[in-house]
Image 1 (cartoon, rainbow, N blue to C red):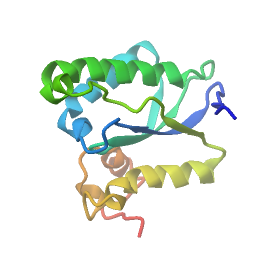
Image 2 (image 1 turned 135 degrees about the vertical axis):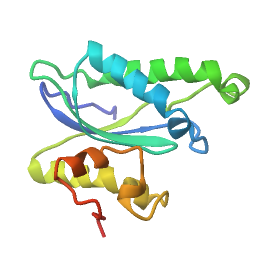
Image 3 (image 1 turned 45 degrees about the horizontal axis):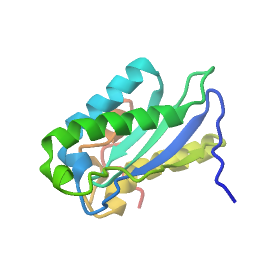
Length: 161
């Protein structure tokens, strides 16, 4: 059975995107390049970032697409391509290795309702604690958690547990 992605115009989606080599820490080592790739794609193919966390070897994001658009796959392809091109120029491990940066696919989930959105929203922000990178969510720098604290959505001391 072949996997079929769900495409809904104006949909809100939760994503997990992994590096090919889960031992590498490219995403946090080269966070500026990742941010640049996202900004470039976002400028040409707009989307709203509802939540985002970048860990060394994978990332989670929640996006909402414009009402007339459901093409998140092209956005991810372009982000991955731009990041790979940029990081391959400066990280010698990729030149001497197999050169693969990302896993071929990514995982997506279309949010069903507010409860489902909130569950994934919290999951994104708690992920650095879940994986043992920090003890408190507020201590992880590569997360939209800090934006949400400023907006009053979370208290700085929030932890899922």
